[in-house]
Length: 124
Image 1: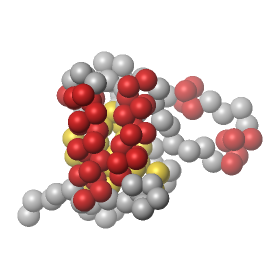
Image 2: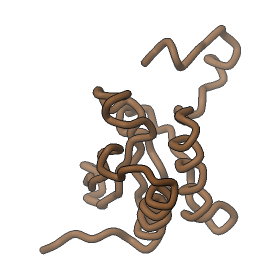
Image 3: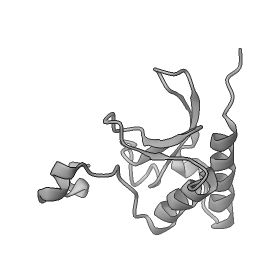
Image 4: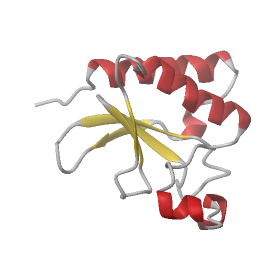
């Protein structure tokens, strides 16, 4: 049985691919692909926020599933929720802005990290 993207993940994929093409960027440089959530079996679209040349360890890769965007390199439950007030198209714009500016988004920080002198750039 072939697995396909859900409606929101497909919208995200279409917006990101279109945005990269319109910006004159090579889509393949950002390692687009599909990943399956090991727990749910859900298929998501993945893309790096920095090119493979700048991020060979895939630390900036995000995956869009039907109801959320997650960081592939993180397994801490951090996510951006996709909902009516924050649709997949808006989440795609956030990722595109990160790609266009070469300033990747990192997972939201926990309260303890906010209180410390935590710098996510130093952990990658």
